[in-house]
Amino acid sequence: MAYTDKARLREYNREYYRTHKEARRATGRKSYEKRKEKCRDMARAYYAAHKEERRAYAAKHREEYPEETRAALRASYARHAQKRRAEARERASLPSVRQKRRKYLRSPKAKEYRYGREAKKRARAGAVVDFTAEEWEALLTEHECCAYCGQPFDLFRKPTRDHVVPLIRGGNHTKDNILPACPSCNCSKGARPVEEFREALANSA
Image (cartoon, rainbow, N blue to C red; front, side):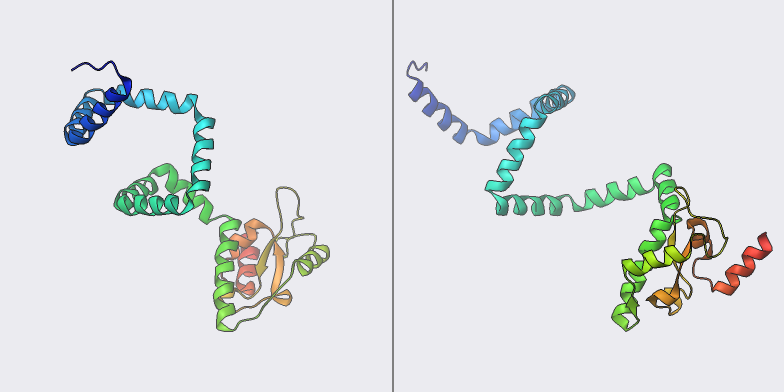
């Protein structure tokens, strides 16, 4: 039946879509499977051409419907939790990622992060944590070179905080237990006592 009245045509289409919903979905899925790569290419091209417009629309939608957006995100994470874990494990097993992780774990930044966590644990257990930024600046004024190897600090050899008695051995995060050290010495010393590390330095010289 052909309709010349647009209002009646829209009503007919709405009723048809409502009564044939599953059939249309099946047809759409079948068509998508046949043209999957082409559909993906078209979608990527559209997103690339309308990137800013879609970002603005998404931001506006999040602002207007914050609760609905959070609920949708939680539901999405729950639905794809196993897939996301599998992808994360696969990504972590890549040689390039494992190499970057090993390099990071040996860096002064990672060491300071680990020591920071230990300091928080010991603070909760009753250890003393009382070291300010001003005290650190004062230490740098007193020590212009590494407390262990004696090399002066510069742009490529920046000072790092080293605990004379390591935090994991019961040391405190206080001025009298901290010395400026170069990243190399800080990483090499690790959790060893000062005497043991100085002896190792002397033997390697």
